[in-house]
Image 1 (cartoon, rainbow, N blue to C red):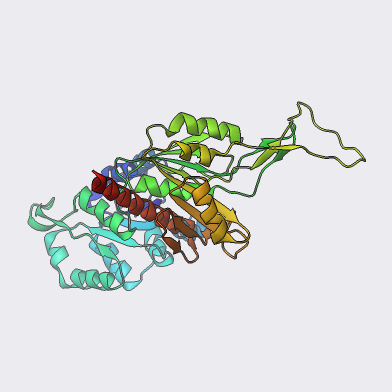
Image 2 (cartoon, one colour):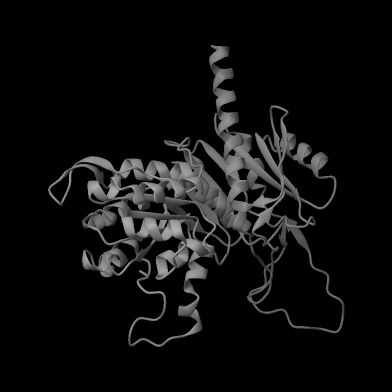
Length: 408
């Protein structure tokens, strides 16, 4: 998940550098936006080095730079790709501008352009914090759904004592998790996730594959990492970036994916097979390009390894999740696959349905669990679907543990 961190002009601006590191440890990608005042206390280079991301300091191209459409509408692009806007430290000035809808720099314009959750951690002089105008602005923001992380009390840089110190990292990060509905309920778990298509070579030029983009599997991997798991992602060819904090292994064919799964599955507690593995491959892979002829050509195919069934055959206490992309009889086929593959959960969908299937940012799925529970989900973003899948994984693990305790 991507967090945009707004840093405003206060002495506590240096603490935002430490906050970047802490957010990264929780597998967030952080991009920093600095106000003019913030740059009086800490340099953009510091945040660029820590975050590995471009630091935004101006609404338009910097003085002397070439103005273009990209720089003029960058606040819209950032607003669309961020999952949460966090402002820490937030000055009285920025609170007033947010509350009154003033948009006179990149950060304030971004705030108005974004529909993502907003978390604000104020830091200022005690009298400024207690002033009626500031408190009115804070209450106005709270009423609009902005989460305010109240400042701590203590000795302030101005020499006074009272409320106004930037809240601690634990409180700020907890507020971020709460705003994003993230629960660290997979802490200590190691999860294997497969994603993307496989490519089965016919010759050096041609291959058999499918339309999978890998988006669903990557969303599951990212969500699991955010929930505290160690995640190993085995990926077929995709153009997607590796989720933060995830170990990624690239493969091409079903056979390569099977070898990687065998190599990595020991020591995992959960395995989620979201990859769209080709069911068949050419019986013969040619070393040279097959030349075009006038006569029809018959292509002999053979089955690829059944990775899900092999992993579930001797799973022990490991929880196994499979996916089923169907075009008809979804529930019937999913239930058959659940039993035949010895899985604990099947995530099934009709890939012909609107907003579902390959290469969409949304999905419409039904979860079929081994304990008989069927959970049909409405059309959701793939990130939200990933969270609901993991919710069901956590529920099934809890049910399994209770059954094990009852059997003792």
